[in-house]
Image (tube, rainbow, N blue to C red):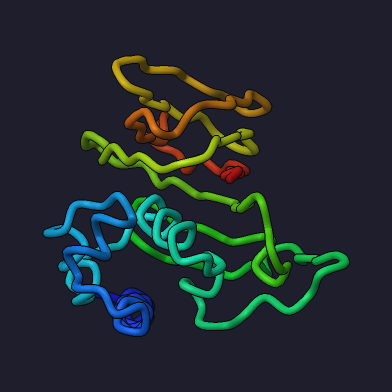
Length: 183
C-alpha cells in the first residue's frame, strides 16, 4: 500500500483508540463492515472515501484531517489554487483533490476526481449525505443501483449516495469531474 494509506490507517487507529472502542464496535458505530474496517486500519487495503466520510461524520473530525493529519484553519473563506488541492492518490483508477480542506466546519466536501480508463467492473460504494457531480472533461458511466447513466462533459447529476454506486471512464480516456459530498 502507499505511504499515504498507511498514514491514514494510523490516524484511524489512533482516533479509535482515543475514543476507547474496539475495532468492531467502532466499525459498527460508523456503519462499516467490521472485517473491512480492520483491514483498512491495518493499512492493508485502500480506504474508500465513503468509509472515511462515515468515520468523519461519526467522530466529528474533518475528513481532511483524516486524509492529511492537518486541521483546517480558516473560517471566513478558503481559496484552493489550480492543482493545489490536497491530493489523495488512492487507486490506479482514481485520484482525488480536496478543494476545501483548509476550511473549518465544512458542510460539503468538494473534490476534483480523476477516473482513469479501465476495463473492469467498478467497485460499488455507499455513504451518507447527498452527492453532486459535474463532468469537466471526458465521459463517465455512473452506475447507481441497477441503473447505468452516461454523463458527458458539461453534464451533472445529483443523487443519493446511500444507493450503491460506482463509475467508469469511457472512450479509453480519463474523466475529470467536480464531486461534492453534502452532509
